[in-house]
Length: 197
Image (cartoon, rainbow, N blue to C red; front, side, top):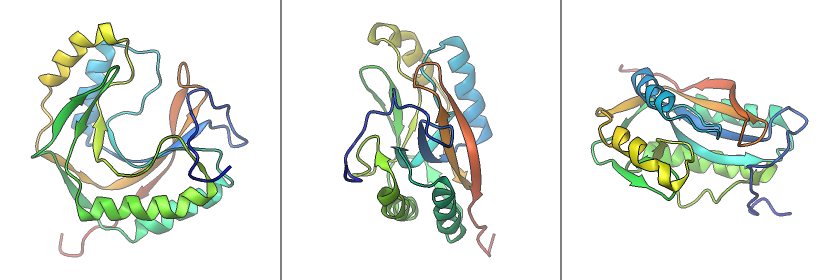
């Protein structure tokens, strides 16, 4: 199977490292995480989900070596300075079962994405195509279409603020299946602080 072949990760079994799939993501600010969690508590879903974040390397499975993935992420992020993710032109997009906040792409995050995809793709399999890369923050897990009305209203009134500072990249693994599983932090990789800050 070629590295570009996509696989459905929902029912992927745990690998020898105890995870069924992986994501590299920038954690959002604590304010955004807390506000999202409050809405999630009001509208629970059986599907496992990661707290507010911006994905930089989308869901991948069947890695050949976890230590190699960690080393790649560590090396790449050590060469990237912290940057601002702006919501100035962000828009909410509702899909059939979920919603995302779409934000404009920009060189710093696009370069980080491209580098991680280039280095990790050869040692993993894809959950969905990496490109074209779309900067977005998932608002909800998956719900039945008929139950989206109330949660839509909650997120339409959500105060996203101007954006947030990208300070690190998280390697996150899901233990178990999409339904009933749990996303767990494997390692956090800090981005470097600009010298003039």
